[in-house]
Image (cartoon, rainbow, N blue to C red):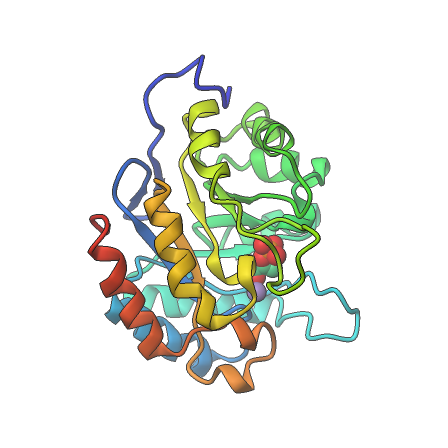
Length: 263
Ligand code: PEP
Ligand code: MN
């Protein structure tokens, strides 16, 4: 179902009032984690003003350490929904358990399947059954074939509204958190009709690398970006070192418009 052979024209995914796919760049932005009602609302206002069209923020965080901040859960979903409504942005957040599907679908416009859960097949089936849009991140060590098979699970379960996200893969290089695989973008576009976006934040782990890698993602032909932004990155509960300052995000939005039209 995901194959380009079966469907030649690009799929356009509709998330609320936003269309993702083709040559226009849709930018999703927000904090790694929702920390409070004020925090998500402040950041939503900042990123909307700069040109983001979808708000991101984690309420259930899949952290490497069990002692790290795990997210606000349902309370966070409530704050995310409020902030999205306030600024007219559809919202996306990560789901980590099939048992959260019914709760989450009342609060969000798009499910995010994280890199660590790309091959959690029961999760893919449960999310796919909703028919709702899904942002499917590439697994840490996933081949393109495995990534597309994960999309196939979602499609076989009932949704055709899938956006693929290249977010860096695990390589031998440790200077950046992961290694952004830009070449995956045009290759995957040959294999599938589904839209592909990039995540320069998790790919690099370093805020100074986010601008150049965003430009590389756009130049590679992607249909969008998902970027972590925080009003006080040094105080962020998670992923502070890769979170952009609002002024850096404003510059990023200006810079990408020199390469491609923005949604
Ligand atoms: C995230 O988007 O906050 C996240 C945890 O991303 P990934 O699954 O790509 O690591
Ligand atoms: Mn993060």
